[in-house]
Image 1 (cartoon, rainbow, N blue to C red):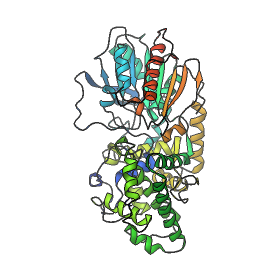
Image 2 (cartoon, rainbow, N blue to C red):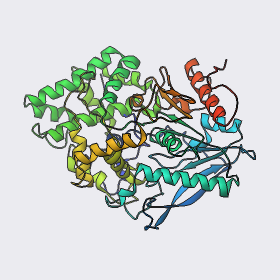
Image 3 (cartoon, rainbow, N blue to C red):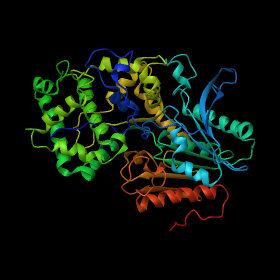
Length: 506
């Protein structure tokens, strides 16, 4: 009954040894866990090892305003972008992959269903790096004062001005039609760009587009539990349920020494410290997500469940503890539950700290704490991960990292304004297609039912996060093929063809 730990939204794994400013204690938290805890809703699909970019892909830097909304502030910065003219035919459209909460990578420009549709339409391809990520940072450090320029509205103006530059100065065609595409937060940006600038953007496709901000995202843990039932087994779900509830019952009964010993915590668990208990339980949930969704392979759920239901352990709690110890044996000697050590990782304001340069942790967390939320609580009874993790843990983290000014009122107002500005699940926009997977938990903050004129939404049964962005292959189900053909037909229609977007390709 060994337990594998997983994380749905982790970015590329980075060794704790790389973190120069992270506490050197061998018990420190692995960055893959920290990246998931507050950065976990915009992961990059896996890039094949040793991938070499196409010779047709070139790099560039675009100069943009740091503050687009203050005419007295003329300060500028440069952000990275990629272009590829391999398939471009004179007079063809511009296809843009919208950057999100991650570094720029040519793989997503050169290998995707969007690239394939671009090739069919003779399109010029481009991809931007979002401000404050990778090496596109407009300030000398990531202090709270400087991060005030990390706003969705600012990023949209970066995108639109860059697109205008590409059309006029690079393509030499100011009248070129523009189709934008992105996934997760990048998908949301793509759809919002069409909504705000219909005179510039002719159509947008968002895959797993996180368009609805919410402070508490309890649907995530609910759906995670359901995925364990569907892709694993009821027995596996029950084993996890028993493990978490046994831990909570022991802590409530004051038997903290038994829990501390079983999980090899660096210091004894303080059952009276609600913040520490919540952090402990939440990190274990994240560990399960990491393993079960590793490499975006949903079949890993069954592999983990096989260990969870191994009868060589006396209890489910022991199985969970053994797995965690084995999983992180190379990076820690004990399980560190120090909230202060956790905060120190996110508190580093330097640009070159691996948690910021490679993961974008501090800047991503600022964006979440001020505009989006998405805090994965365990308050619902329809999930197996206990009942003690609330959004109080995340609110405490936001204030501890960025300052006491970041109160719950600031967060709630930020979430409200995001939904107010962009319309959440009713954006009243045209020429947009929203696609989601039937077992992708982010569909709960996306749009799964929507149709007006040439806008629509589709959920692909049994599909996982961003599966539909990949090129068509022999592994695609009939439903996935239908989704990908729908994408192609909508884009073709937005470009001016008379092809019906409602026809189903045989």
